[in-house]
Image (cartoon, rainbow, N blue to C red):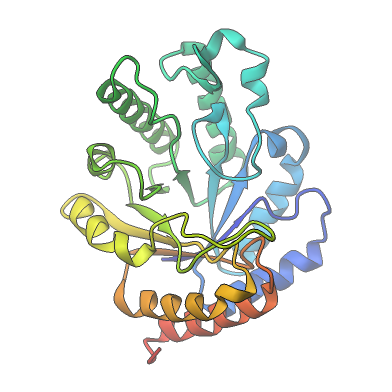
Length: 300
C-alpha cells in the first residue's frame, strides 16, 4: 500500500471540487490510500465535512486511513494543539505533565474508546494510523514501566477498534529516536498490519534559520524496521518531504531517489504537498513524478 499523508486537510474552508481534483490526482500518482487527521477539532466542528471527505476519497478508489490526532497528548498528527478534553478533565492529567493523559485512567480510556468508535462506525474509514506515540520519555517511576504502560494502551486500542471492525488496516510508527527497547516490542503488538518509522531525506528549516539535521534519514531506519517487523507484521516507512528550504532541494532530490531505490516497505507513505516547503510546487512535482516510476517499477 502507498498512502498520501495529508493530515488536517480542508475541513475549515471546504471546497468539494478541490477534494475531487486532489483525490483523482492522488490515484493517478499511484497512491492506494490517503491518511487524514481526525482530531478534537474535527470532532467538534467538522464531522459532516470529514464524512464527505472520506466518501470523496473512496469514490476515487482510495482507502482512507484516519489518524486519531493529539488525543490526550498521546499521539502526534495535526493540527499541533493541546487536548481540550484533557484541559476540561484535570483529574485525568499525568502529574507533572498536564499535557499528557494518564493511560490507566478509566475516564480517559472511556473517552478515547468513544472517540475511536465514532471514527470507525460513523465514517466508514478503511484503517487507522497510530502516529508517533508520545510521553515515552516519562519515567513513572522507570522508563520500563512507561514503555509497558504505553504498549498496554496501544494494544487495548488496537483490540478495541478491531473488535468493531476486524477488516481495519492498523499502522503504527515511531520517531527514529525512540529506543528499540520500546519500538521492537511495539512492532509485535497483535493486530498490526504494519509498523516502522518516519524520517527525512535532507536538512530542514522552519523559516529563515540555518537548515539542520533534525531527524534520522528514513533509509537509515530501514534495517531496523525490517529486523523489528520480521515474523510479526508488515513494514512501514513515511518519507517526510516537508520543511525543505530551497538550498536543500538538491540534497533532498538525491536522497529521495536513493530511498525509493533502496527500500520497499509493505506500506509506504509520502506527504502529498508536504507542508512548509519553500518551493512546494517544485517538491510536489519531483516527488510525484518519481513516485509514479516507483509504482511502475521503472528506473529511478
